Length: 255
Length: 245
Image 1: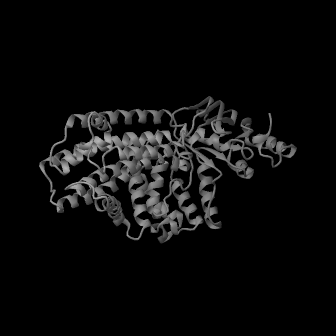
Image 2 (image 1 turned 180 degrees about the vertical axis):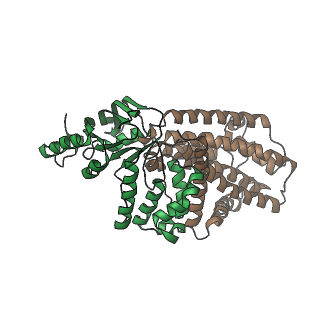
Image 3 (image 1 turned 90 degrees about the horizontal axis):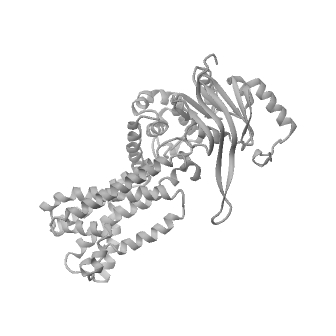
């Protein structure tokens, strides 16, 4: 067995290498990490605010915050699903912990998501929604969302080699969750008892907490967030153990 | 083999792959059926056998990448690594960056890689290309870089799958000379090769794998004699996967 810190070095260097590689592939390189989310948001803005004339005041802010939170989750867990499969060549040549592959994806995609968050923060600032005291709750939100992403992402990465069709199903489930997370509508309008059910969806909860902090300048209810974070951590640890146990099975099934 | 301490021992090892035969049905294909031998400290063990006889699977088991379905692979506490070239290379990164990445993947520590960086650059003979993206390399140049890095790997047991020398004429000679030097040293090495001359030259003992079974284990000259007689007698050119036992 190798020393633990060598895996740590590998994790961070591989993430850095992937980011560099991606940046060098394009003419305007790093700029894409800003432009891409802007374009994405523009599309939603045009359709929902421009064309459908949806929402009241602050709808643009409302939409952008929802989107940036959702996109960080969606893109990362989708990429994670392919993390081990895409490294099949490597897996058959070197004995390395498979959990590293989704973790690298989480690092790179999270890094890129921070640019999108930057864009949203900037927009909030210029449109008069500057930082408030409630911003102090942001680290908690980021940590909880990272844990959710780690749990779901690593779970997907662990499953797909056994069942490659899984990611095809997942993309539909993710779309369903997207529609059920109140990204482009206000869940306040959902009548009870459906609304309570609605907020059982972790992403819906997270999105509305981000909005509470960033747009309304109010504190989120910490208890559900902490429970969510701990649950995600538990799932992550279970997946970690599972992958550890089946470490030598992956090279056999990933072909 | 004055020193007879076992490093890795295989006892009746069997290993299968799953072959898809229909929508929900899979069939087991036994790549290895019954392989037993012991690898001793400091020796160079040759592995021979026809295509598809299970040699690569065997190396994966020795490296701990996979585990057997039957039998046992007993590792007496040693690190064993496959000499894999260009594992995880990223085209848009420079030779230097890929050296760090590849080194980390192979298990050479960050400190050791940085220390050896100049040596690797020198040996690869890439000159200023070393700081260019490897997407601008020819396949020979990539192979040279891959070899130069992998050669720095120093596990207790080195598993070599056919790679003795790579690249153009000059580099091939240089790299295979280095490789042979390493194999002849006190290092424990398992060498898989179709080049029987190399096996004869480098390995004291040899295992012959046929149809997933260890047919013969022993002194290289004896095993090679048996193997050559077998090749003459039957199965010429026919992949051993399909031979019935």
